[in-house]
Length: 201
Image (cartoon, one colour):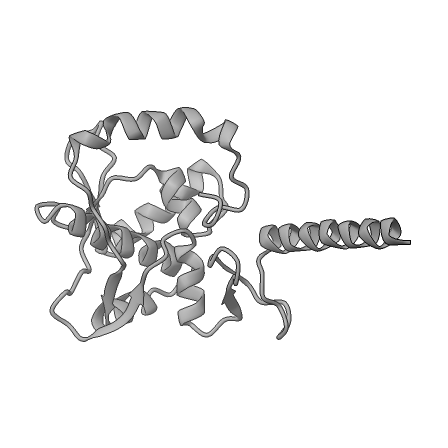
């Protein structure tokens, strides 16, 4: 957790980790290195006229493929909450506009909803697994930025935690969180060195 999530605090996560560990024996271990996105799938997303909807559609596509990997009988369904989906898509908006954007994808024939009123799962209709593999996605934390990187925007993978972040200059190596950790570590080491030099005198 410390390696992959710079803001990790054991006190905040202890209850959740204990709950997940307790229930871990109920399910078989699933290890997914990533998912392939095909050329036709990328073309479908790229043809969406709105860039925000492109990020949302790409995120849903990746999540559907991941859930298909976990369960071969999933049939391209996504059962994450809207909050989780939009967080991974890197889209900040109101709850009302979240529904509006999803409805826009539905009206375009790209997704459909479950028939049951109390079932909020989303069925993704633009998976073409037989096509030519074009893009491999192995990190699901910032799928919206994965799409932006694919489109040629200036994003980079942090040398510390590997998360995608906006590139501000050519010498940048870390995201904000890791940059703060590296700076504090350097300051700490510098203070130790100074104290050591002072004790020698």
